[in-house]
Every structure is written in structure tokens, then in C-alpha cells.
Image 1 (cartoon, rainbow, N blue to C red):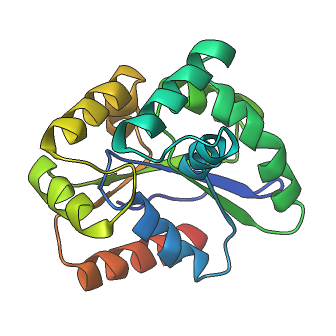
Image 2 (spheres, one colour; image 1 turned 45 degrees about the horizontal axis):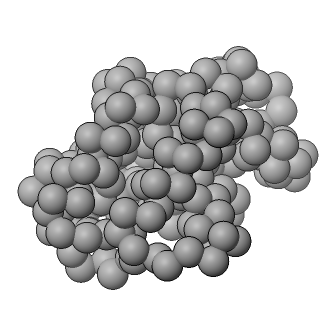
Length: 192
């Protein structure tokens, strides 16, 4: 779960990944409470759906994410986000990217911040994740079939690979308070 830090040259970029409903957003909220700025890759897709004035149905977010990748490359969201991260690093010792979903995105981040990038995976079982998304009320969440389609799509981008290869992991097959404690412990260890 925890790992040592490298000498800091400008600031750290931490990208959190995990399957849908694993708790990436919850992790980001806990870290944001420490004064760390958070940029969400999912918010970029949600903004594109709104920009195109599309109806927010469970499938549309995945379709737009796939369309962006097909039109502009698998790394499109990472490339678009990188300058905003650099701007935040001028003022903050750490920036969190919430929702890294594929190997192409990780490649961009590693190339941009070779010695100042680390990844963290939030892990939870499929049943736990599905139960959670049924309660969170986002427009991109649907029934079990759409949940499985979404999982398969994100695995196709390499999400399963970047989870396995993450530098840090937090298990989220636990209650919310315990998960918050795990997030805070990780943050304290990482910034010590």
C-alpha cells in the first residue's frame, strides 16, 4: 500500500486508477481535503457530453470517451490534461489525477514527469463496485449489463494492466470510514 518517495524536483503527480465504482472519486475527495488539487479525467468526458448537448444516458459517456480516443488517439485526455497539471505544480507540491484509465495515458504521464509520477490503484470486487454505483446516482451508471460493458471497455484500454502495475494499492472492500482511514494513512506515508 505504501512506498517511499523520491527526491522532489518540482512536485509529485499521482494518478489514481481503478475499475468503475472502486472508489477513485472517494479517494480523490479525501486527498483534496489535504489541500491537494485534483483533476478528473472523467470530468473531461462529462464536460464533452455537455458541450455536445447530448442526453446523459449510461452509455453515452463511454461512447464519447471511445470517440475521443478514436478521433484523437488513446492518449487524448492525458495530453489535454498535462498542461493544467504543470500549471498546478507551480503552486502545489502534489497534484492528483483522478481516473487514469489506460496504458496510453500512463505513457504520457511517465514521459511528462519521469521522476515525479506515481500511480495508485483503488481495488474492490465486482459485486461491491456494482452495489456502490447503484447508490451513487450518476447519469453514466446503469444496470448490471451496462456495468459489465463499461468494465470490458475500460479493460480494453488497458485499465486492468495499469491496476496490476500500479506503484501503490488501496483495498476498498471495506466500509467508508475504514477506506477514508486507509486513504489518509497512504497520504501521510507518501508525504512523510
